[in-house]
Length: 98
Image (cartoon, rainbow, N blue to C red; front, side, top):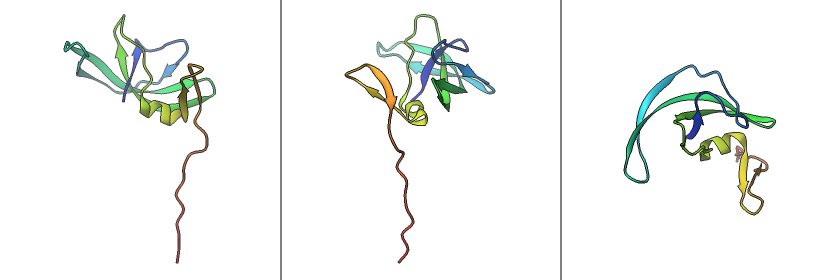
């Protein structure tokens, strides 16, 4: 899932280093088709960061963090507090040998 970024930055989600960009067509919930620029960026939220695919939002569009970005940041949504919180330890696989 992608997230919207107005222009090239947002004060609470800094975006740095866009290198590649392409235009994609999206279908809005109301059926309207829109074209937006898509690229990738380093996304910082407080002390954590990840590389994420971004959609450069037009004025008036919602600003969203998608599931892939939240996973890359190792954050989850606390719906009761309406905050992003640490998701906890990442799962790891072990090699079992007979």
